[in-house]
Length: 301
Image 1 (cartoon, helix red, strand yellow):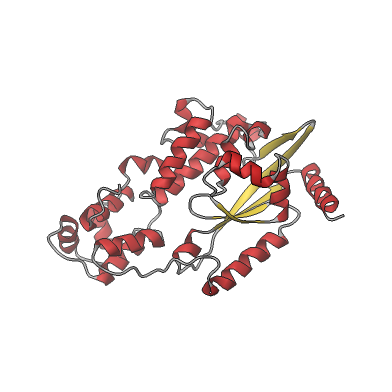
Image 2 (cartoon, helix red, strand yellow; image 1 turned 45 degrees about the vertical axis):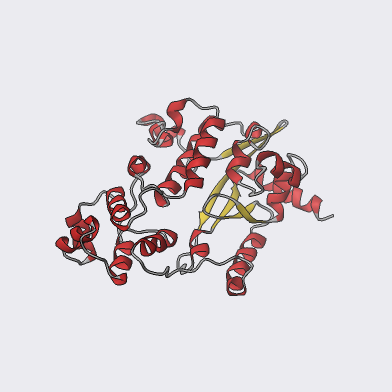
């Protein structure tokens, strides 16, 4: 399995219009910055056969496509697309979280959310839509108004997209006091998701919408990861950089400081499970920790 390319590889992403097997295979190989020889060596196949498959002169077997998908580190959804382009049925199922087969996964998610109280935690799909939230997250959103009304205001599609909630001028954005530091990092995270799933047109559209809403200079949301380029260097770096990028939320005279951790399933064999992420927020200082503890206590009375 090879490392995924950095965000600036976006310029060579596969497109929906090029859904044939030769086009997909070549696009993924280029996206991972591999020559045919390099891919053939790592995958354990002959370069000549790989060249014939990529040019459409030879038909790939199901086993070869699965090997190439693993070597190229394709997400399970993209692996299914590669198999479909090669004339084979998908291997990895996509289930709803409400399916009986997903009961253990849902239970694990719900326990994680519960045990993270009194701090916010959310379960997200591949497009950053919130599928589940704990009470602390609901309370945080409730600071903006009635949660159902807030979601309708920031995401009329009904998907409850947390990035739209963060970027919308009637969402969390007015509360984020360090917006010019936080927004580029969120856009870079989204760029990395596009690199991982470059045929997901919804992610491309989301990136365009958020870039327009960000209020940042155009250079801040190009394919080059601005968050890294903007970091200080030399002696200033040691004093200026913290271990994480904290989100500073201003509530009147109060400033809450939070950072987040994204978790995924390490042994997913289902498209839905493979794409699930849990975002857990942690207090970055004692004041923020006490604030959420007291907020939970007041809600429980």
